[in-house]
Amino acid sequence: MYDFALVFSLRHARREPPMALTREQIASIAALAQLDLSSSEIPVYQDSLSRILEFVGALDGADTTGVVPMSHPLPGLSQRLRPDVVTEQDRHEQYQANAPQVAAGLYLVPKVIE
Amino acid sequence: MSDWHTSTLTQLAAGLRARKFSSVELVRAYLDRIDASQAALNAFISVTREQALADAAAADRALAAGAGGALTGVPIAHKDIFCTQGVRTTCGSRMLDNFVSPYDATVVAKLKGAGAIMLGKTNMDEFAMGSSSETSFYGPVRNPWNPQLVPGGSSGGSAAAVAARLVPAATATDTGGSIRQPAALCGITGLKPTYGRVSRYGMIAFASSLDQGGVLTASAADAALMLREMAGFDANDSTSVDTPVPDYVAALEQPLAGLKVGLLREFFDKGLDAHNEQRVREALKLYQQLGARLTEVSLPNLPLSVPVYYVVAPAECSSNLARFDGVRFGYRCENPRDLLDLYRRSRGEGFGAEVKRRIMTGTYVLSAGYYDAYYLKAQRVRQLINADFTRAFGSVDVLMGPTTPTPAFAIGAKTSDPITMYLNDIYTIGANLAGLPAVSIPCGFVQELPVGLQIVGPHFSEARVLNAAHAFQRATDWHTRVPQGYA
Image (cartoon, rainbow over all chains, first blue to last red; front, side):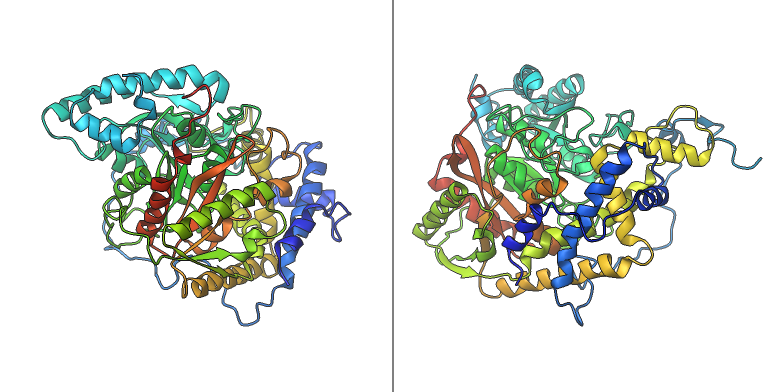
């Protein structure tokens, strides 16, 4: 039922995807992702994201009734705990050497509250 | 000596220990090869000449005092995704063009501790998102077998560097095939270890449930030597596994007789180039002659691995890359109007087109109303694919098949259609979804371009996988071929 022919045939599916994303949808995704897009970028992502969503739509054909979602490739391993002690040293000067703008040990950004 | 570059890492390490030549001589010779090839291949983003020569001099002093480690004085390169203290670490992105890491990745620290000398940082697809090394802010990497072609990706700089013998080994990372696919396209050996085997600390995150550090070398024996030094538990990586590191080098020579090899039926389906298939089938025949028992196995859900990947990986990417906000490090836009403008323009200008595409895909599949339909669904199918592998390893020791559908393709040939590009990783993604170790080794040529054979094993079976690869390399010489102009 799921063979490579299916996946490869999607590569050639140039027809308009059933649920092509609108300009507004792309703008709203970009806003959620905090990405500024130029007006010329929007149609490019409209086209490619629509096609990616159509492509991953192949997953709908798989029967996953009762299947537990897999979030980690090594099942059975749990997150480790460690004693609640301070392990980090104060290295803020070193870290802040990479910051675009710093003053008195603080990261500077444009004024947030008028 | 002029034949250092055709020696293996193992031979170079032994030669240094026997004091046949010095690390300074060796490092200088390789640095000269890097400089001479940079215009043609663009394999490096940074070359750390002065530091390398100083480290080599220190290695020579250690060797003179009889205090060398397994890799003392041996030159290597790191993919520019690994943080290197005091050295620019860009991840191939404008976003990190000015980023100088304040610490070493665990892999970097471990290899430094074993005595390896870093010559520089290799070029790569931006944030490791790509299969051709064309999305780098620093320009595309070129394939040493033919400069009109891509080297594969995302670890294309490391692969081109090892293929052209600019370094005997280079670190790399593999989220969906980024070690194995460029290894296949460049005619070298590429090892992706089991998820959790090599620390991810200091390896800039793309998709945390899939990312795994590994290595590109000229042979399986060299990969075993590198992995022995790179692997191991790390408290700084919450998914690092605390299990002993076997001596991968000692396991190389074990006999192959009786090895049960499963042929992945789904990998020999439509889409596989007929010539590629022929080379892979010849390799499988050789395994049979070497004493392996071949059976065909079917993993019925495996063809869905690319769609699963293009939900899971972008979802994790959109979360991981939220940290790049123009505030604490990395690129910041000019004259931001307010905080939101600072975030949005810094990210919009700092990230390239493919990275933005993946962030947005991930944002969409995680957004309210779509999470169940895309993300949870993909995680459930991931479980089915994992179960297919578990079932297969109930009856075979390793799985074999092609690494890629075709040999290297032309620069620019697949950049306009992301899905065509994504399908390059059709045979490699499964191992990432299930967290399995896998290697790609050269198994012949099609029109003077290398072809890769992939060997996948159960969790923590790196010794077995490398042993099988080594047995093939003892019987063939494909892995010793060097592209014209670099021999």
